[in-house]
Length: 261
Image (cartoon, rainbow, N blue to C red):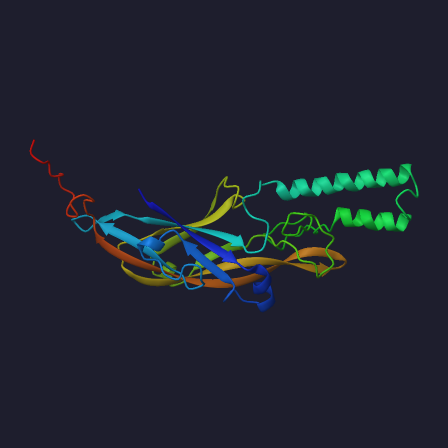
């Protein structure tokens, strides 16, 4: 059965957008640190891939990589899938309650202008729907604590998670790995994730590149929209290969020695 290896791609989106590069703004982790991976928590990760083969030289097992992109300084991915939509509905209901109170008791909460300003703050800023981006649209802007905010172009806000749009480079060109995007009911990745089968019979160190799409808020024609920003991030695989061994005897896969009765 193939071994599942996970690679976490953690991006500091605010700095990456400001510097227009993922270099120095990406932190990579995998679950193979105890097996030889290097550069954990940096942008220089080298993922260890342990291949093995049978006595006849045929491949004993293959490896499968799974990339999981996350945003540093945004709402955690562990919140329920409909969290942002529910927060938006709550603020809409609160704004309607405040508006009804203003109509029923005029002047009870200050001037109409002040009350309307307060209601606008409660409603927050909604991002216009657009087809230019794979990121979210038609939703409200939230801060990192999950509260809806009225965005003015400078306020701190939560960014949508980064989106991997392609995986290519030396490891793909040399047919070391075969990446593809898959659909899944996974709530964290919103139904899509990138995975690759790795040919573990060809030892060596190979580079590959991830195309990553970030999103920043842009005011255009009086409407706020998520503008896609496409950047790239490099990483490496180090494949080693050794014969399949018995974990007890550390030798071939023959019968286990049975001690005398």
